[in-house]
Image (cartoon, rainbow, N blue to C red; front, side, top):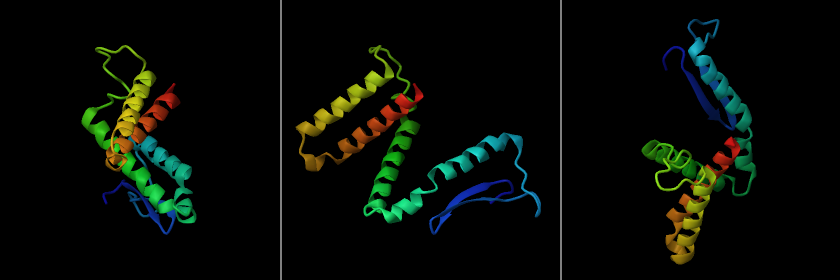
Length: 141
């Protein structure tokens, strides 16, 4: 770790933030890093109970893994394709972002209906991803 870096970690269900200080007695955060640090701390407090729930819930581990897999898929696609789902270019369709996401969900449901369900895992993951993007869009309106 370099001085000034913050590391978010979880150990035995306890989330923590470790900051390498500039000196042994104080932790200083430069102005350009304050928002990131505050955001990280807010995220920790918002999701602090997830680790505990993961072990209490009968399917907690499997649920968390599935959610992380979908999150990774969405983030990879967002890096690869940009914000095309939440900010479409609208060359042919002038429909709202919400309507376009609903159409994509309908397409995925139609594909699931018309294919062998045992071969539908990727399509189900895509559908879940579009539903999450729909929630992101609805939360932003």
